[in-house]
Length: 200
Image (cartoon, rainbow, N blue to C red; front, side, top):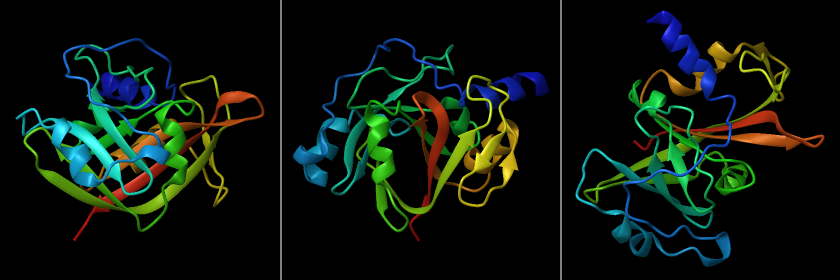
């Protein structure tokens, strides 16, 4: 059991490209220049399933449908621009993890900042609102290794992959956006995490 958890803890840091998922009605993602208002975006995300996270909206920043990882593939990250992937392992801890590649929908994550509100839409039309509390930038010291240590670019603290996972995905109810940081020609040079807590 512990070995399996450790393996899952490490998988998110690879953000390896995988292929398509099926079983969801298509929802259109929007570029920043063509963002709809909240209600125009929210209606198409509804499919009646109260347990299913279907869309994420940040005013003037992003409006993206959320796709699920296949049951047997916790490594899956969508290769489609205009959507994000819910990280199933984070859900096991009662939290929401949203993954995207930095050359696709993940490029909008860097536009998020502390204090912004994030709306999560569920299939039954329910909306859960979060507020961004921190933006974390890390350099992967061994970018090609899933066991890499990570250097916090703001504090110079170095932590392990397991410590990283626990920091951004476990604990009290919250939402975490994750993408890679490209630098020096390496698309996996670092990691960007944007953490948001429920709005009180």
